[in-house]
Image (cartoon, rainbow, N blue to C red; front, side):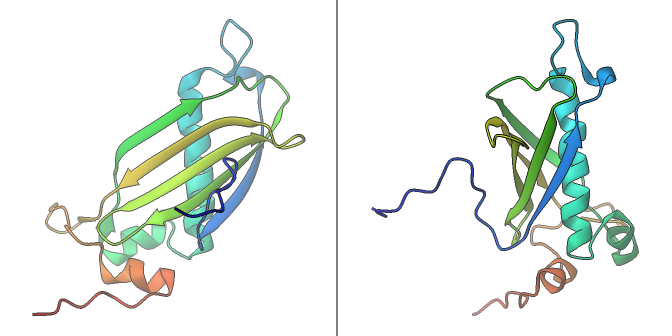
Length: 153
């Protein structure tokens, strides 16, 4: 067992991005906290920043001939976010070989207190045929600066 334990507020990855958002009034529910459904939008903002940082945003995905629909999204709410609060959203690519999995950590930008942990999973779909790819296409490996895996007999 590894004697060093990963800090619960860390997302361990080579490919990560931080985005800061300020909670707006229109994001609140009747309890004056961010309505749970708005977190999906927060994740999307962070995911776009991350993908743009590796030069594989949605325009580049489309140009490469692949769509990358989200097929799974998981969120764990730890504390409520409130009006005017600045949030830091860290997004990190943690799986890429057969799917694109991104982990997220949302914290209070001032204190570092954890608000939410989440993950999304996307798969490559060939735009020409509509067929799902069972291995991520070479373009993703290229954008990550990794060699494409070669099957060995």
